[in-house]
Image (cartoon, rainbow, N blue to C red):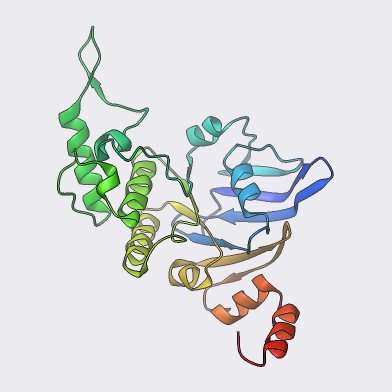
Length: 258
């Protein structure tokens, strides 16, 4: 079994008197999809921001490729190879797919006057999207004309092209239909096959089970356990997320099955 790319040990994060994370340990290995599951308020957003350099942990250690590392900003995390795709995707709908793909990292040509190399950028965009199973009509089409799943794929392809070793996906399927969700899950599988470690953040157990290799449940800032695929089923994961006793009480009061 390969060593983790990133390992977070006993991470705590306090905001004044509020304890958002209380001793979270988590890691992800090359070519693995490790799902972090939790309901609203479980601490998933704080965890993402701590892993990606937005927040510094109050306590605990972060190891990247076996060495202790401290991120002072999201740029530090990006330069190390940690890319985060948030739900808003950081895209401008009226700009082309290519412009969104290369936003802030535009290839240039010319020695004196640097000009955006449109031909090269278009070729790269088409090829990288093709690798992810998306055949664009044209690279200069507005990214807003793509489906939600296709826009997710653009963001994922962009991160991988620019050297992501760890890809953090924040609820990538939460607002998608069945077909678009299938496309995104297939993209995650392709990325995993390229040796990238994927951190899949979700509250949807079915989507996590479809693509995950390991599953960690977060509840009120603490991890309730980690399981390997095949050791746990969807019902057990759902039970851990929601709290088995609370569900049982609700099920009894409603006189049915939840």
